[in-house]
Length: 80
Image 1 (spheres, rainbow, N blue to C red):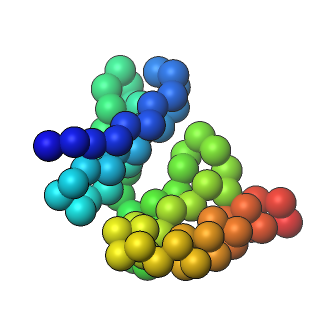
Image 2 (cartoon, rainbow, N blue to C red; image 1 turned 90 degrees about the vertical axis):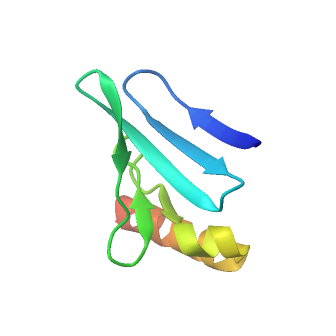
């Protein structure tokens, strides 16, 4: 089983995309990585990088247009 991992320092987030078609986004909290839940629209929002939003279902379906639109919406919210 292959996987991708994106990790930051101990104070950051970690995102793992696996071949099982799941996205698990972790946050570092009190010395351990804990899963970060998506909101009711299925969007994961970074706690470390303001505006970094990930549309999970769109990503898994290969709908990169929606992934980009959600990311741009998050970035716009943070810069407003």
